[in-house]
Length: 609
Image (cartoon, rainbow, N blue to C red; front, side, top):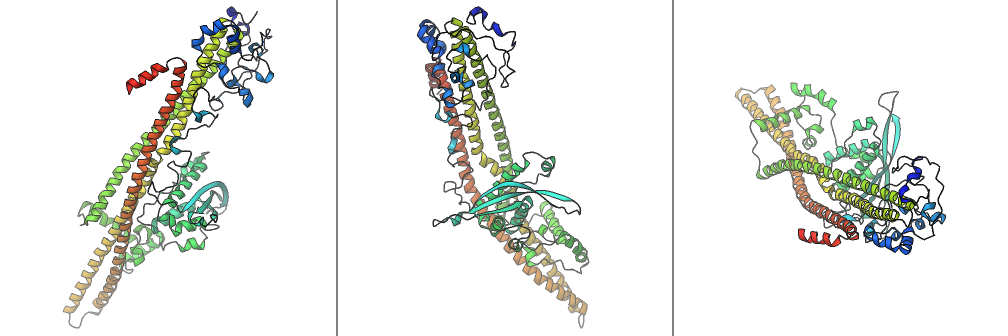
C-alpha cells in the first residue's frame, strides 16, 4: 500500500505502535516498514511542492505564516535532531519517505536544548540556545543591586573585595574524650581596595575559617562596635545541618560571603581592626596573637555565680569598674548588676517612667518606628517571594506548552511527509505543522523571557530583603543605647544611696562624744565606694554619649542609603517589567503579523492607550 494514499493515512504502523509517544524518552525501536519509492528529489519538501504544485501552495498559503524552508539548517550547526523537523541532511537524502520511522530513536527535546532561530524579527538576546538571558536592568554589566556602591547610592566603596569558597570538611578531636567531631572550613579570600594604586597589584590574602570563627567575629563586633548598625551574621541552622541537607554547605557558604561583604561595605566596620585581623591572620584564628589582643576583658558566668553570695552579704563591694561600666551587663560577671538593671528597667516601664531628654525621646520614637517598619518590610518581602514563585511557575507552564506545540508540529510534519508531497493532506499537514511550530517557538521564547525577567526582578528586589534582614540589627543597636543609659542611671542611683548612707553615718557618729571607730571605718569604706562609683558613672555617661552619637550617625547614613537603594529598587523593578512587557509584545505581535492579524493587534493597542 502506498503511504501517500490519503485514505490509509498512518495505518501501516498501527500494529507496531498503537500510541504516538511524544515524551522525551524514546521507546525501543520497532522494525521499520519498508520505505516506499522516493519521489522526485528536491532540496526541501515545501519548496518542491511550491514548484511542482503551485495550486496547493496557493490554497494553503494562509496556513503558512513561517515556512519551514526559511528555518536555518541545524545540520550545518551540528544540531541535527528535533529542531530539524524531520530533515535528514546527514545522509544526503532529500525525500521525507526515506527518513527514520516516526518518533523513534530521536534526541531528547527539552526547553533548554531547543534552539530558536533569530529569523523572523525575533529579539537578538534569544539567538543562542540554553541559558540565553536578556540584559534586564544592567544585570549583565555589574549595575545590579549586588554590585559595588558608588556615588549614585551614597555608599562608601568597600574596603575589601571578599569571596568565600572551597568548603572542606575536617575531622578533629571532640570535647568528649574518645570521640571525634567534624566541621567545615571555608576559604576566605580578600583583596584590600587601597592597595591597588600606583600600578601595583592588589594584595590577595587567603585564610581558612570555620563557622565558629564567624560567630567569634560577630560577638567581638557587638562589644567593640557598640551602637553601630552591623549586619547580622547567618544563623547556625543546627537542625538543618543535622538533617544532612545536600545544599546546606553551599547555602551557608553564600550566606557567609554575603555577611563579610556587608561588613566590608560598612564605612566603620569595613576599616575596623577586628575585620582586618579576621581576614588576614594566618592559621587558626583562636590561636592568633593579634586576635587575642583584640578580645575585651570579660568575666565568666561561673565567676559571677561565685561572686554573688559575697556581694549579698557585703564582703565584696558591688561597685563596677570603669571598664565594666562601659560594657553591657551581660558581658560582665556581675550578676547583681544584671538583676539591678533588670529591676530598674521594669520599674521605669511599669511604675515611674524616667525623665528623658528631648533627643532621647526622639530616638526611642524612632526605635518604635523601626520595629513597625520591620513588620511592613516582612509583609512586602513575603509578597515579593510569592510573586517570584508564581511568575516562575508561569514561565515554566508557558515553556511546557510551547514544547508540546513543537512536538506536535514535528508529529504533523512527519505525518505530512508520509502522505506525500503532492497530496492535499500532505501539504495541509505541513501547513498546520508550520503554524503550530511558530506558536510553540513563540511560547518557548516567552518562557525564556519570563525566566530572565524573574531573575532580573529578584536582583532588583534584593534591597528589600537586605533591609528586612538589617532591621533586627538596627533595633538591637538602638536598644544598646538605652541599655547604656540604664547603666548610667543605675550607677547614679547607687551613688546617691551610698552618699546618703555615708552622710547618715557621719551624722550619727558626730553625736557621740569621742566618735565611733566602727562607724568611722564604715564611713571611710563608703567614701571609697562613692569615689569608685563617681568614676564608674563618668565612664558610663561617656559610653552612653558615644553610643548615642553612633546611633545618630547610623540613622542618618541608613536614611540616605535607604532612599538611594529603594529608589534604585523601584526604578530597576519598573524597568524589568517594562522590558519584559515590550519584548513579550514583540514576540506575540510577530506571531499575529504572520497570521495576518498584526493590524488588528495594533488597532486594539492604540484603542487601549
